[in-house]
Length: 325
Image 1 (tube, rainbow, N blue to C red):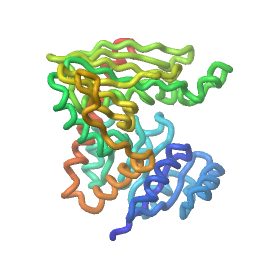
Image 2: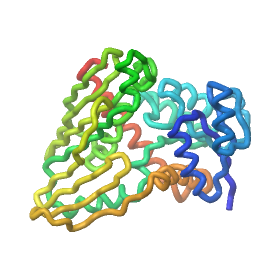
Image 3: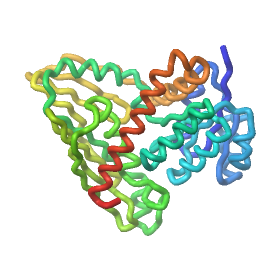
Image 4: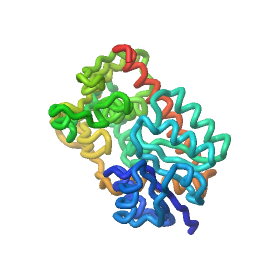
């Protein structure tokens, strides 16, 4: 089996989760770690068993690592990915892969020019339940409405109230509720129902200038889809897709877990098996391995991922426009 070496940028819990998932993918080997703090880089490298620590992104680009997982702050994504792609390194970038659809297009075509791969680390596009959910839609008849929610009280919220400015609530870092959580709702909406005819959206902004919560109504010819998301409160509701013959409920819209299909009497007629978090992260890493070792047989998913990133970013831009952001 062909060996593929990868390196990571960033030392947060999400990077650790990616590595744990990648460790289960045969053929992948963790190469190096780069952090803006060399001290954090060394500590993280020892923790995850990396071969080396990079002192600069230039060292990453000059190395023989095959691809880079970018999990730096959102504000760093564009420039770091651009530099890596220019130096012919394939990239998996954490969501959001870019701030605008225009930025994404520039980097995607840069990757094409250099014959490397560039896609978003979004679990939804690589979970097996994505395809099963699409098939399940056929069981609930004509769909008239749907509701997708991801509202999770941020672990950094207390620090914000105490007067600190965590990155996730700092608009200079290009973060906030829509980029962090709302994106997980937009993905299934666009994937399952296509691009909406119109979008009506509102966001609640915190004193820092970052959005803490928001909602949107996406209008189609035959249905209305509602999205809600928040980092300042915890939701107890489930996402739902409503048809005239039944209803689908989704426990976790980001991981496509807890999916059940009910008939109009309230009886469960179908359900989907949950993947573990490690498996979901492994799917992303496995996709890159397949793109690099056998692109011809896997290019369908690759270009599908690109098209989805483009459409999702465009939809999120429309959602921001209502507030002039």
